[in-house]
Image 1 (tube, rainbow, N blue to C red):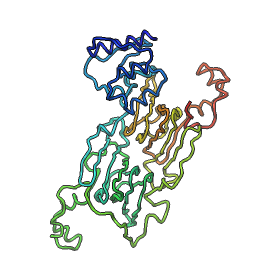
Image 2 (cartoon, rainbow, N blue to C red):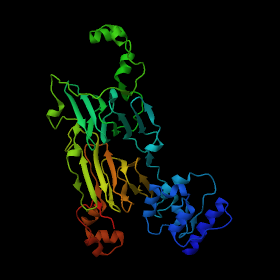
Image 3 (cartoon, rainbow, N blue to C red):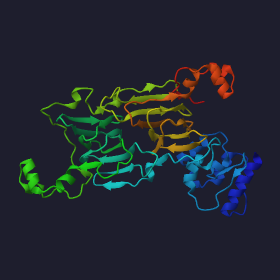
Length: 442
């Protein structure tokens, strides 16, 4: 093994044109000598190193070379070293990967930020991540008093506040309205066609948006009120609103999307009623006021928010998941829909099994999104030794559903399972019959 390490160090040194090779006895020493100093303090590198006690130095160096299997070699041409180091799975770090599986990962850091008067927005749509046909996502930021202008969508909108607090306002087709304040951890859902707006209350406010159509940027998906006003004849506006046509002389000709306004007092009453009067009609789920459930397996928590406890959310079901260091979201699949994920904190690794001997592993960190196609087998592992992993998962469905590999095997005639996997009957008999959603780290 020492000879392999020396070979990797020597090849890397030669690649850089250095006169004297550096020889190291341990992978950690190779890392500190061979990785550019600018990258050594990176949180991404720390997570990669924590993956194994003695990882093959080539992968922690960002090189596609496996000295144990004597496969691959070093990069000799142009490559993005920092991205390579952050994504060892793309270099072949997992030997069980096989075949061609399409890319299932996107980072919001790769999205173009749209800068606006009062905030910013950036998104991930199907043209960014072609595998995500059912769901699109966005991050949006509002300064205090700024508003996402009045609008509606052809698709449903789901939101999760992760910084600050916001005021949402919405009106349905029957004239019922809702004005509610949401804090960190709270969720809203607007069915398609519902008119709404969002107002920033704290100094800085930020939230995740999810839509039940991956092609969210398509024409005819989002409708802004000032855009409509600007493209309607003024005599028609005057007749419709019962005002003088000159009232609309200063309406913006192009929609501002986000604009500086005021912190709203949120007071408006509808003669028809308030949507908050019933749990079946409210557009808000105050998840911050409900403690998450300790997940079976003891390795973290899960908070499911779908139509069973948030009745209005009929097309987007969600779960907020935390996994303790080195914990594992057990091997499973989802029978009803693709799984779309947003990683909010920490570092993760996941392998997606696509059948027919096809499998691919991905590395994730905060700000990344992913899509696991429906019925593909997968797991998600927290690869950190000391940091909690947090992600939000969504499905274009009215409920969250998964099938546990361990539970399936445990509830199948054990002699058949043992014969299929070529393992002892004792191994099968000891499998847990209850789902172990999040397995404790070891």
